[in-house]
Image 1 (spheres, rainbow, N blue to C red):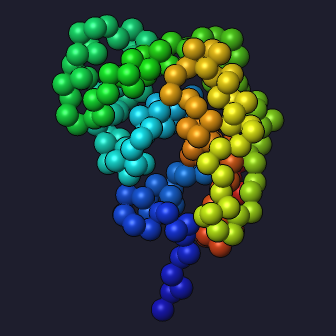
Image 2 (image 1 turned 120 degrees about the vertical axis):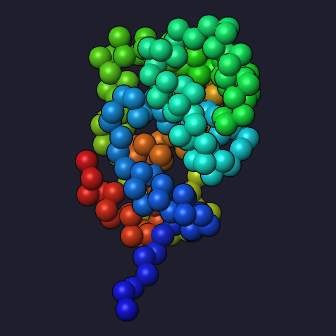
Length: 193
């Protein structure tokens, strides 16, 4: 009989969580569109569970033009109203307006740095931070680095990017490997570059 895989405890309550944990969480992401998608989804999560966001992820992709920052940056009041009436996503006006502001700020960062990837990964010198946590309780909600990144993002016009959201973003995009050392993904993610 095969040995069951050991996963981070937070990920085992739902098949969608398991899939996300096994395939995406902590894997270094360098595609600008994927980095933008995670930035928006992490902001949308504020005050909600990540599972809520994962369940609505495909709806967000449809509603927000597959997270095309160029298109989102041009959203007008009519599009905002359409989104506010879309029951398949999070209908929070502040988060929707922040998504538009974030798209505009994202495009400016791309212009300045050549890519958002170059900008955001510059905070970790292009290499993931490798932690070695043994329990969920050890994993911080934010760090001095997530506070630094948060301040810089806010200065550049981003919204819903507080230090806790930024740290969750760093975990999701693989800037930090917070898989527990007992998790089968810990070493697998460390081998990915």
